[in-house]
Image 1: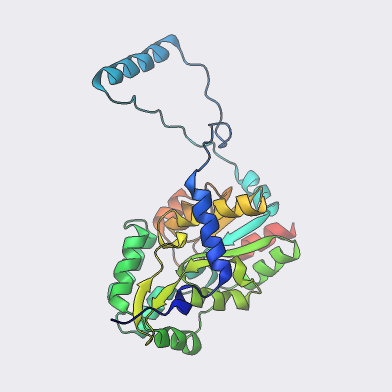
Image 2 (image 1 turned 90 degrees about the vertical axis):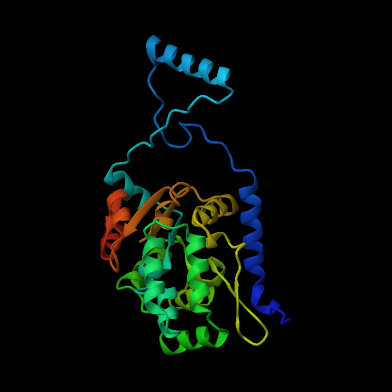
Length: 300
């Protein structure tokens, strides 16, 4: 039985620290009241409404079940407020595939390994929110079975292409002393390559890690990384707020996993410059198709 190359599983002390911090932060999430979470306090209810609520609670108690909770809707934020939040953010987090770069990294890897069609359809469903992210990632990697050599050759022979305007946007944010992070459901080896092109330190990269046997064959992926599952990007942002005391964090991305990271992100900006995910376009309060729009906001 072959052993897994431990150097591949724990290639950076910073990743172990980041992962530990996230697990610790997610152990006991704080309870937030309606007003703390940004919702407007509700108006006093009428006697009839209060009585109805009481009847529900009594009936539920008699049946041994909890009374149904009333859904609290988030407060709508105007576009001008969103712009102000973006311009005053402490940190901006970007998705990578189809946002910072024009491609989907896993689709490019599948193409390189000869299983493009089947994997591309799975990616489309995962990004649209139709399939749990970890399940989709597991299925796609089981089809691809990428070796360490194939991943390295992909980066060398077919490096990812930066989305027009992203280099200028990241540079402008950094000039304003805004911290920039890359949070991706893609693979760390590819995302770190992208980060180096944008002068983003590897400590500001959160992504999934592939595992390989000593002979370089595929051995799975690190399922303990928060970015390996739905809701993982939100966990990373929660960690960043706790670790660095950021007051305002903006999340920018094209997919459902990016949109669901707000909250804890304070603003989500949907991006459709490379591919349009209809669910994101329909539900994002701020949706753009060109990074020039955000550059313009910073220049005003």
